[in-house]
Length: 136
Image (cartoon, rainbow, N blue to C red; front, side, top):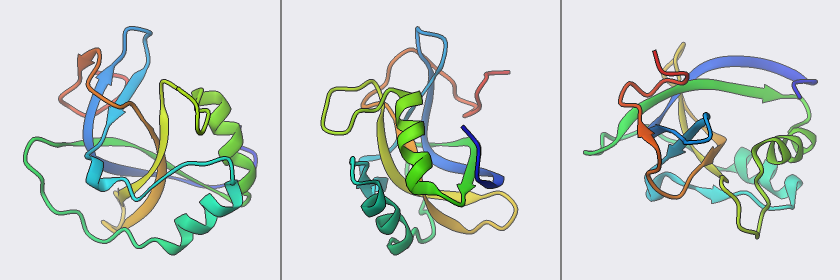
């Protein structure tokens, strides 16, 4: 899965994290944070990511900080389909997860950059208020 990995960096996003009944996490993000939804045109998705400016995150009542890792690849147009399969995301079809482009804040610099992530549509499962997976 991680062939072509250039970097794995700690990052955070705005949202709410849940432990789903299946034993894995689900992220819900504010709809306004989604800059794009993933498609089967992976080259276009990579171009969209490179064109979008994430900008600084403003505080938003009711949303928390969710922590994770941001992976950068030398061949994102090849990695996106592989991650879509892993996450069960089928663009244009019903899926548990949806791939969306949202602002992510890098822990080491505080810079906000656009990043693809997999989200669920609505709250489901056990809420994890600490924003970390696996839960402590």
